[in-house]
Length: 382
Image 1 (cartoon, rainbow, N blue to C red):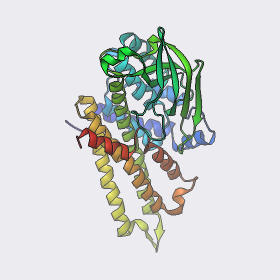
Image 2 (cartoon, one colour):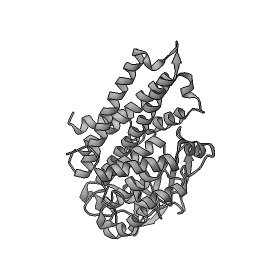
Image 3 (cartoon, rainbow, N blue to C red):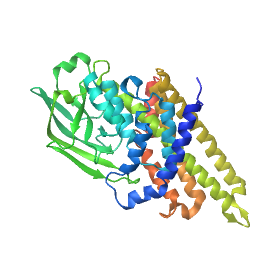
Image 4 (cartoon, rainbow, N blue to C red):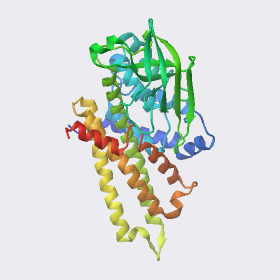
């Protein structure tokens, strides 16, 4: 099992870095923040990404996908981390697309997957209901009424929720037939224009698109429940979340590599006592430790991506390992980067500040280091 990219994946990685550095530089992220863009990304850039085929990368060829694999998609997320590119690739494709693929029946897959891959439709996952990520604590209720459902509840931090035409809502159900599967939960497709659906923008430090969702007596038909028979809702959610966590870890890896490179360059340029401060042994030791931790994170991310493509049984363990290390290093390396830059590192005019803000949010998305260390221990039987 090789962690190295093959020729096709390496070309995809190189082209992704080149494209995003040219079309989505850090100056674009600054513009999106300063203009308080509700979408949090450029629709024209998203269309270019769709034309490149990135949303179809991991879907099977039987569904019209490219079957490039997650190791290839992971290299795209690394490139996104380097340029801070804001795209709904994680929310619409990795999370919601995977849920439709795993939990949807054939007719639902035929209806939604092509539109997700060609960019004509976008979705967002509405799952968490508190300040910290915890899928198990879900109070949103889907009540069976006649031949449909009524949804009531509230969701926080819906990634790319503003402007998304459809939501995938995770909820508990009161349908007695669910007792047969011992999974009284469901995944529901909700049109954001329906009566009782209210989306409110939530701004976090990275100025991306997040929403708070309120559902009050929202009525949907039975065919809007993802109703595949080969995978239960909670199993499908866990599988989709693990793919999202690994992609976030890959994005974090790219972001941290960029911060490390900028800090290393600064140490060679900043002169004190007539010599570059990078010549001071104490600072060299700090950078060396960060470099080794970056290498370990890269190994964890690559192992997790390979596990996804190989469909090995320990994907969940590797996902939590990669996300825990990425979350912890997002805090440690960025703190070091700020200290090594000095006061300039926290000024708004300096691009490192944008990287720090994204790292702070990425650290907590889909579970922080504490969550994933606990989950890792639980999965290992401790």
